[in-house]
Length: 65
Ligand SMILES: [Zn+2]
Image (cartoon, rainbow, N blue to C red; front, side):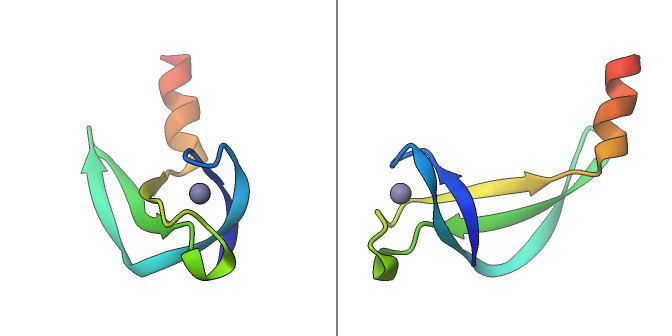
């Protein structure tokens, strides 16, 4: 569980992570991919989406270049 922004409801809501996270590589950057759901049990809309978690260093480096 965690509070995240739901694009359907357009507000920060209580969400659930579905399944195990996986790792994806994008242009040489390894990111952590999670499937998130705004759970209906808690009165949510049931919308599902994915998040990518990146190390901050990766983004800061690319901004300098
Ligand atoms: Zn929602």
